[in-house]
Length: 124
Image (tube, rainbow, N blue to C red; front, top):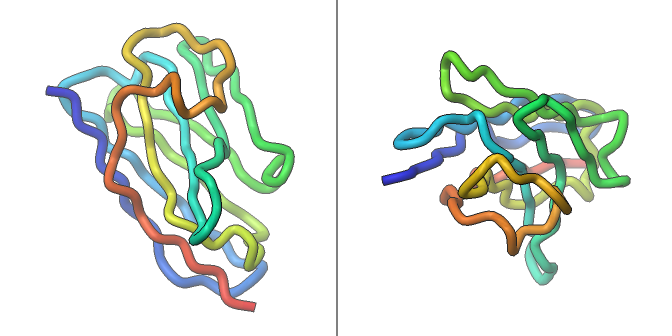
């Protein structure tokens, strides 16, 4: 059974940083994986994704501030978030696709395995 579990969320002031982690079990992180977020009253949006060749994709709103990475030895995905803004406040989810295929990397519908989410709150 594939499971992904997020951690690392919390309350931070604007301009601060957080690093989210996503531990995968029952599968390898050597597949298309991504981070998504959903704020109250808004649709879930893709934040960042990484494929098996370590190519990355980012939403325009986070480019230059967020960095996705993974450690295959630890089976863990990360999201380093710098220069956080109040509009980054959301529940953040880790997700994995069923295979290495990674077209349209920020499209949530193509991801099969989802974590329960970790809350990130940025105060102004």
